[in-house]
Picture 1 (tube, rainbow, N blue to C red):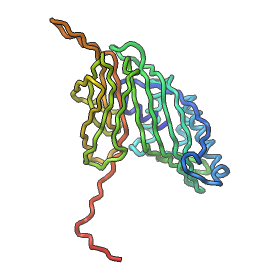
Picture 2 (spheres, rainbow, N blue to C red):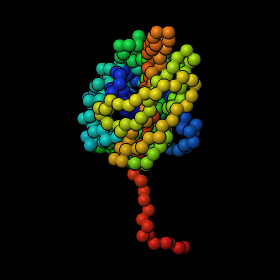
Picture 3 (tube, rainbow, N blue to C red):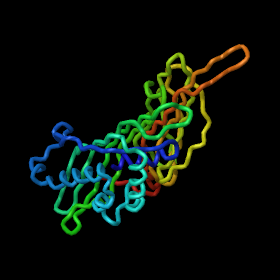
Amino acid sequence: MRNLLSILLIFTAFFGFCFSPVFADEPNLKNIGFTDMSLESRNNDLRAFFRNFNKYSVQHKLDKLMSMYSDNYVSGDGITKKKLADMAKEAWLAYPNVKYTQKIEFISAQSDNATVITRETLKGDTSMSVDYIPGYGYVDSDAVIIYYLKKVAGEWKIYSDSILHETTSLKYGVAKDIKMSIDAPAKAYAGAQYTASLRVDVPKEYLAMISINNETIKYPMDKPDDAFRSIKADTIQERILTANEENKNENAFASIGIAEAKITESDVNVKIKGIALLTTRVNVVKQFIESENKKDESI
């Protein structure tokens, strides 16, 4: 659910949103390098917890879903329980048709504390359209999320979560058939520079207008204001970005417009045939500066 709501953070500044999750089969932990001989017996209740978590999401039972969160829940992006509930209602109204899957990758549990790592995907047509592109958009998201749980009065509650990795695309029109991707480091130091790279395989009959930028993660997102550049061939475009100095997680994003240009002796007619928004998460951490006064240590 967290990647669903994080997508809502991004795309409410651009387009609309929709949602309909399904629960994936139980994973084989050996396939990802984790083994725990007692995991099956110790953590059935946690698997059942997440099955209910997804069932309530599918059925849009907000009260039951929110009951699975601790009252003092705060996400790694600073989202509180109340704000999470507001985002869930908005997402369910805007994205009724998108399919969501969650696969448990790893569970580590003690008597009263647990950490669960999931892989979550979201794919499907949106219910929202844009005026100048016929048809609906297509959203595709992939995320790795850590949920932190505690037992409260004998029941598991989510008290926080953090997204380790997340890439998302939303495409309209001919952009849905064009291969494109954005890449940026998963972690950056506050105030430091990093490179965001955009790859767009532009068909020869089109030209692409692109913008690459970054934005701190908050709700609601500000609509970015950035100039577009035009590219005409299969290419990789890069931009040096500076991470925010507030130690807040952010998204590197690219806005792409796919256009068809008709040039005559007396006129140039450019018609937008597709648009896309690509994002990738950059988790921002405070820089560590070693004191110059630190004494040398010898063994």
